[in-house]
Image: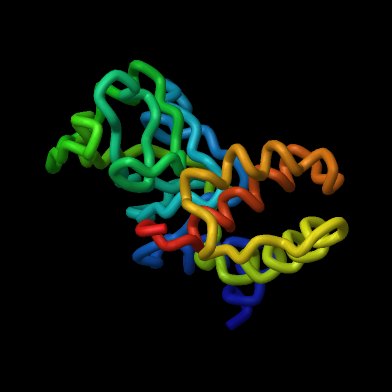
Length: 195
């Protein structure tokens, strides 16, 4: 029992519970490495990116990312075919680690490949749940984006329209770049793909 209290006080108990999670999320931006010694940078994982945590080693966790890459822009990992919701930006070394799972062609004849890639991030950039962030970002969006007009309903704007709409309005709404990026992820992850 004393050991559990000591671990909890040091923050280690939280990390070990994250390591047992089947699905977690990236908190802020996280550098994605080939191993826990930070030998090779594979890319950058973006805020709110869903990941599976495989194991923990010291202050690092081995995680797997799954997403879609489009022909001609293989360094950007997207959430789905034809959806401009970026999960990660990969280096050439990171792209060499892709395991290809399936391919699809979208309505514009662009070939998309579903990939998985495994690497390491600092455990402090992992959150087991995103629901609290979504609640806070919903409030921030509602407060800042309804000061001059009624804020658009999340499900009434196309998922691919949010980036330009938010970019055009963020300065007027007084949003910092970090707030804008986080609200964008909230809006895109909570907008149905069919919209």
